[in-house]
Length: 196
Figure 1: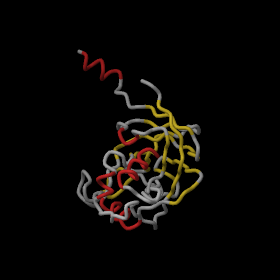
Figure 2: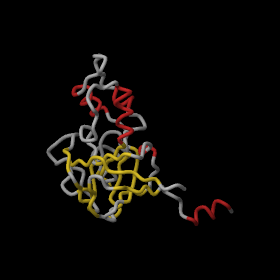
Figure 3: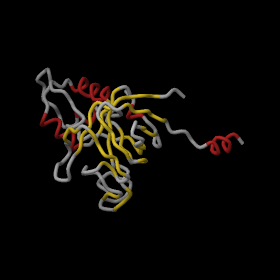
Figure 4: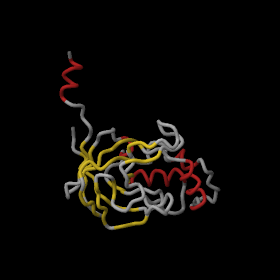
């Protein structure tokens, strides 16, 4: 399989007292429970409406970090006819890459490897939520002057909202870092078992 390479074009961190959006930074320290100082840093989290478990149940935090591709942001921006530039920070996303246009379609288990040795593992697609749709509708305008409905973002961002995951190996991630995407491959023994 062909190696996919991308580049970090934006990094963002969100403190515990800030909702949804994040602030731009030059680097992130990836620790085994998430990015140092980020509101999502934790080995566990409480479930919310729409999770696999009931709301309030404490579970493993599979959402220690979030990422989106610059190409995906542009697609959402164009679909919504936004006048202002849509940024990863405004969507509450930690990392924005360029060169990985189908980032949202990466399989669970895919590894994102950085020069420091840091590795992030993809856990799942990050579906667009109603709350972010409300925020975008109230913060942005369209080129045509047409009002933005709260559902416009969730429709435009379907399958291009990015991914979430866990830190597999700790290390520093810096702006302009290259990233190597190592797609998930089932273990060899599974392939052998399926052939028999």
